[in-house]
Length: 430
Image 1 (tube, rainbow, N blue to C red):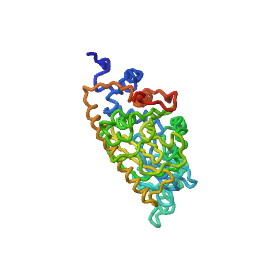
Image 2 (cartoon, one colour):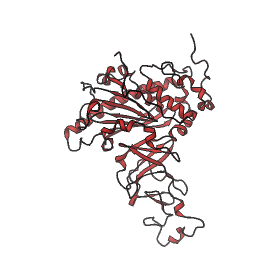
Image 3 (cartoon, helix red, strand yellow):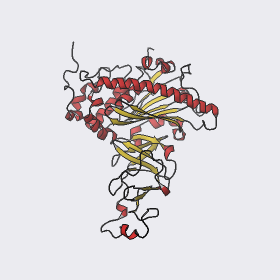
């Protein structure tokens, strides 16, 4: 018996090899001959640390929803590559993002659950009361209204005479921020390429859904004992459906699956037609967006946005999973169910019940996925496992994704090309 991995270094792989092209030669092969990404990519703390910088700190990362920052002073506090970031709107309603760090002594400004930056739209440091406007400018250090300086002691705190100090030089450290549809993105790089370069043709493919008007309705958080890539790779393939998802398998037939991806940093599949519900549940329950025509009116789009976001868009609702890598073997998921503008569960009892049904169904499906990826995490930590052969019929999206990760790890800057046809049947013989 031939050992396909005999020429690879023994596990654990020396971290110096994680940025070497030769390390990934088995995964760089065409998908019908390729093997999976090296196991250390899923369990090595050293790989995880490099990945944070080379992948997450160097990409547009989806971190939240436009509707959560719909006015001056509203905010979300998110984490990317281990950095805490504030996303808010200034007085002119322009989106702004900043590192969650005071310019004085680096205290964290806002807690992770903050939804408003503070009184009058001001961000105030809890340590020494330095305060910033929602546009990031430094307002006071700390002489300003509401600074709680003890009466009669204002002169003690006055820094106006400090040598070589100008508040204009001490605003919050900015972070690039942008939107697509209902999603918020941030990029930690100093001069990132436009978000559109990373999304590729995806906005055009989903343009008729008018995603910018869709509204988050339900949110759940899951703490997953697995690497974030295992979560994503599980989402990208349907190989596991009959054994892991008996309910989903009834409403997502193999013969209805197509690969659906053009140029862009994403993997994409679709199912059409969308199957009707069974007694086990399904994707019905809400009316579809009335303006959809053609294939969009009866197709589900399943997209993994590089590096770490699942996006499902069906005619009647959307489902998003934002994954936040915490460690090599731990991921926190935020799963959000959204509806289009024609659905108002607050005013329509039938719509409210539909949202509840969909929320329950997705929760069942997601928990099944998380149970299996945690089992994979347990197995992939075994040093005896060196990698596995790709299943060409089911795992082309994984191969595409894993090669995006490899590109970033070895310093290659490119956007993968798309298929020649808009849709390619995944199982032509089914």
